[in-house]
Structure formats: C-alpha cells, structure tokens
Length: 403
Image (tube, rainbow, N blue to C red; front, side):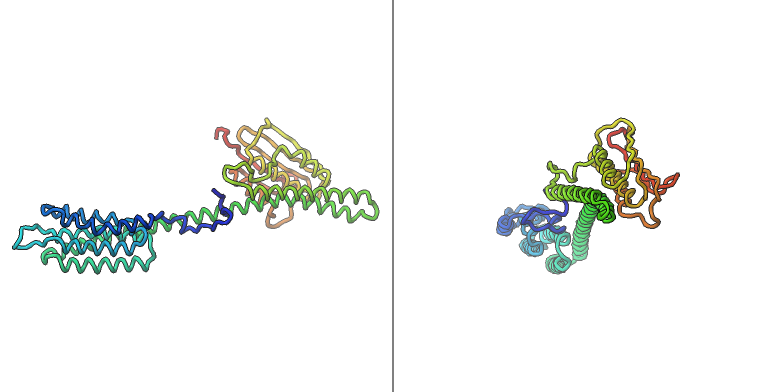
C-alpha cells in the first residue's frame, strides 16, 4: 500500500473510474457460457412434453444465468443474446387454441423476458448513456414485436403493460445504482482531495516553522556582522560562525524531513516528521539566547511525562515560532515561556513585553500555530497581552485522559 498522492515506481496512477470498476470475469468463462446457452435453452423447451408453462418460463429465464460473463464483459451483446434466446423460446413453445389442450405456454413464456430486463438494468447501471439508450430501444422493440406476434388478443394489453412496467423497474434500478456509484466516487474524490490538501498544509507548516526560525537567526546575525565587520572583527567572526552553524542545522533538518517524507509508509518504521518535541526546548532556548540575543525564562509546571508525538511536535513548533516572532518583531530581548502539564491537557504560554505585533492580517506563523492546535482539537489565541507586549497561548487536550 502507498500513501495518498503516491504510487509505486513504474505504476500508473489509478483513476476514480478504475478504482470503482467491478472486477470482470475471464473472457474464456464468458465464451463458454455463450456457447452453452443455446444448448441449455433447449432443455426447458423440449426436455419433456409434460413440462408446465410456469416451469418452462422459469427454465428459460434461469438459463440466462450462463450469460452473466457476457453481460459483465459486453452488456449490450449479452442483452441482445438474451432477447434473441427468449424470442426463440416463445416461438418454440406450443400455442394454445381450440385444437389442442395446451394451457397457454407460449403466452406464459413471454414472461421470461424478465431476464432481459435484468441485463438491461445492469447495462443502465454501468455503461455510458449512448449504450443503454440503444439497449432500451432494442428491448422495447423486441418485446413489443414478440407480444404482438405471439400474444392472444384478449391478453395483448395486459402482457404489454406487464412488460412495460418490468422494463421501467429495471431501468429505475439501474439508474439508482448508477447514481449511488457516482456519489460514492465523488465522495472518494473529495476525501482524496481533502487528504492531499491536509498533507500539503502539514508540510507547509513544518517547513515554515523549521526554516523561519533559522532564517530569523541568520538575518539577525548577518546584520550584526555587517555593522561590526570593520570595527569589531571578532564579533563579526562570531556572527558568521553562528550563521554557518544555523545554516548547517537547518539543512540537516530539511534533509531529515525530505527523507522521512520519501520513505514514509503506512505501518512502516520511518517517522513522518523529525522527532523533535518538548524535551528539546532547552536547546531551543539556548539557541535563542546565543544566536538571537533573546533571554528566555522557561517555566515548567505539573508532572512532566511523555506526550503523544503529534502533541509533542506541535508544542515544540509553537514555542519555536513564538521565539522567532519575539526575535524579529517584538523589539525586546526577553520573554517568558510557560509549559504546564495538566491532568488532561497541555497548556503553553509565551509572553513578551515588546512592541506587540504589527496591525493587519496575522502572518503565516500565527496561522500555522492555530492550525496545529485546531487539528488537535485544542484552543489557541494570539494577541496583545493584558499588560502590553504580545501573548501566545495554546491549550491542547491529551488523549486517554478520561475525556
């Protein structure tokens, strides 16, 4: 199996029509059924002179089962063969009249057209409009001619009405099945599109949160190096070394992400995302202090425990993006990060005393943080703090906590 949006090397991607297609029988089986059909049709007609009309009708109708393979392979051909066989059966049945004691076998045999109606319903369900319109026209023509030729005058209208109703029921059943198939295909297509969109957004958030922090550090350090390169060469060298280290770390992270995306399989051992989480906040705080000059007061409350991978990664990315925003937009060199472990939730709060965020539409970073929390059925807020500055808060429910 392969994840959504991927297919095995060398294989062509399957369309919805291919996914929804019904497996067809082997052509040899269909050919054998077609060859046996004329032979089997003679059994209910000439097997015994004592065969009643009801048994004859059932035999003629059931013999059409041999043509299931043909109907599945070429429905229009199968329908034509069943119509022809039923007409032959009707013509071969003994007529009723004043000179014999037959009780209307020929008229009763007309009811065997029900097998052709079943084939017509399948044709309407699975084939294009042009084919099933031809099939309806052929069925109406053949059955009308057969009823007109072999039915007695008093029963002509009754048999015609019965044949017409049976044909309408078959067509309605075929149309209903067609609509059900099309609706199911549309739902599958919508599910695939939503899955692809969700995966694209997940990758976009991951790349943004990973690259944005590093680019922010590189921008700050490159500015420092540009200002002091002539007056303080040692400081400029330190800034360039920080840029090099950050660049290498970002490149390694991107490589891990791309390798994980390429190798990820359902049920496989390769993780979908790099294994970062709350346990790496210490390194993140130290990196923010060393590379961006932001002093972070990291506070942990509650009983620390292992978190689910998706919650762990989301919490880390929220703190990472918040520290990036502090370094780039807040205009301050200090902030406070609170990580509180509750009984059934994880609470995060990042507060700074800077200038706040610029007015306007939230950037991709805040939007991505909100999407992460929303996917985990949590609550997220970001905006000016009650005492100034900027505040980011996230409340993420933990699974298996008695909710």
